Length: 185
Image (cartoon, rainbow, N blue to C red; front, side):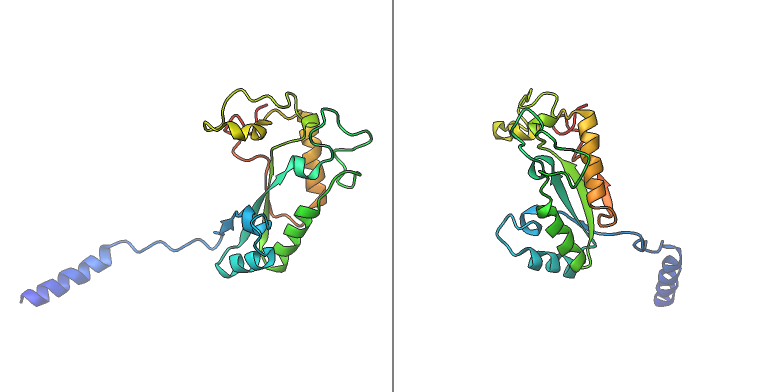
């Protein structure tokens, strides 16, 4: 009798317990590993992208570092004739990110770009000024280029968007904009 009661109780419990939730079909996995995916670590970028895909990654994220693609980033004056809003303007060097996008696409990965500091001195309202230690570290001062000239930042965003139209799937305009050393209007 006890075993019939136990079986019946367990069967009833199985009917009333909630079922586990299934994963959404719209869910995707994002990986950011600039050290490996941008070949900053010395690791082969092709292998790193391929491995990311084999691990189930759907999208790779990277920072588009403004002073890395712009001419004369340490100058207080924008280079003469340089058109910030034109991705084909002489002085821009997109090769770093062109290769990244090409490799991601070759491996069936979507691309997520985040526009990021440091920015060129000529694009800052207050270049070189950092009112605080970032996380207590004095060596992060260059990351404190946090006050871009709004019009120039808009032009840069437009240039990146034009350059990578149809090749980048997700965008964010700045990393951690809630932290004052990243983006401060």
